Amino acid sequence: MSGMDRMVIMIVVLLTSVFPVELFPNGPPPSKGVDGQYSGRQGQVLLVKVPLPEEAAEVKGTFLDRTIPFFREMRTGEPAGYLGLVGIDMQDAPGTYELVVTVKSGEQAKRLSYHVLITKEKFAVEHLKLPKDKVDLDDKTLARWKTEQDQVRQALADNSALRLWQSGFIEPVNGKRTGIFGSVRIMNGQPRNPHNGEDIGAPLGTDVAATNDGVVRLTVDHVFSGRGVFVDHGLGFYSMYFHLSDVLVKDGDLVKAGQIIGKVGATGRATGPHLHWGVKLNGARVNPYALLDLPFKHRPSPESSASPEVLPVNQ
Ligand SMILES: [Zn+2]
Image (cartoon, rainbow, N blue to C red; front, top):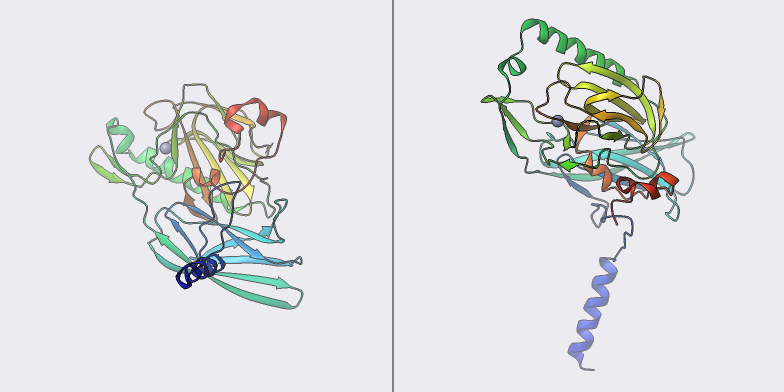
């Protein structure tokens, strides 16, 4: 072996020890840099892990004025620690921000700091033509809309302090995903709020399943969202299902992942039957499909072997 060959082998060995190869059988690699830095696009969800062999009294993160409660690692075969789901709002400005995690154990508090790089997502621009009265609201409709917004805000201010969801998220409808999360909306030529969820086209009456376990915090019949369900999954995490033709649950009901909570409809401001699926994570409006990319395995259950839409998405 020549000196040159030896040199090449040395470099390869050095490189692999500096950049260890990790395998993620349950999904794409987490967007974690070599020295504890994270990065993600607008609307994405980051899974942040704080390795910690012992149990802590409280592990809490702060990111862009949002409080992120951490929970114990529950995946089998993973080192002990705490996990946090950090949502990047679709309108968070690109840049590098600090995520501060405080670990409290007894009298002691430890402060950890991570850097999170937010990158720009390329959102679509949607031109919608709707009946004039659905875009330019009269005073009565506007007042109704404001009351409804308050009702939602109040209901969502109160959330479960326990993690209610289990490993593995489910796509609520097996339909045609439109990819318009975060799209800039121009309605009848006027710019409006960006689209804060994903629309899934499916025939009228198609079953809509809860993405994960939780408690029904609110069921509504609202001017824009139509018949809708808000599911509280705990720790500041909500999923929303709008424009339903039927709602099959009521406020306070406990729901399981994959449980049918309603039917696809076109109620509220909708141009045709579809499900509007939205997710709020500690106040951040994130792409619901980002949940499916998280490295959580689905539990084996009789339902998951029977219906294709609840099969693990990352396989
Ligand atoms: Zn929508």
